Image (cartoon, rainbow, N blue to C red; front, side, top):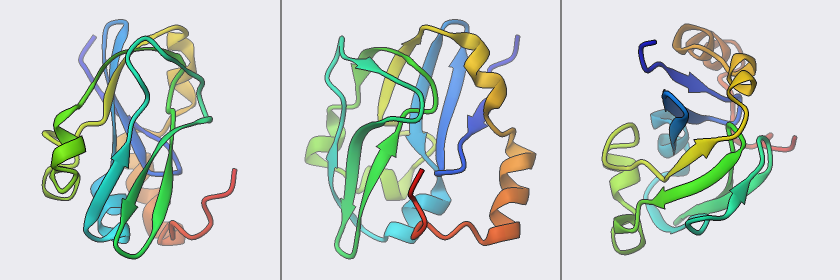
Length: 134
C-alpha cells in the first residue's frame, strides 16, 4: 500500500501510512489565507471526528477552521507551528503539517478525493474558501 495523499473539499489533506495519517492544509488553502500568524491544533491523545473542527488557522486577513479529514486519536502535533506558523505557508505539504492521527476507521478514507479529483474540484469551483460551511 503506497502512502497516498487524500484531500477534502475544505482543502485539508491526509497522508496515510498504514493506520496513521498526517494532516495538513493544502497550498491552495494557505494561499487563500495569506500569511498565517496563528494556529490552534488539537492536543495529543484527543479524539478527532471526520468532518468536525479540530483547530484553526488565522492569517492577517482571515481565520479558518481546520476540519478532520478522518477520525482517530491525535498521536502528535506539530509544536513548531506555535512559534512559527508561517511554515504552513512555506511548506504546507511538508514542514507545515498540523498533526498526526491514529486512524480509527480507515474505510472513511475512501470518501476523500484523490490528488486528481482535488485538482478538478478546485478548477471547477475555484473552490473559494469563503463557502466553508458544511
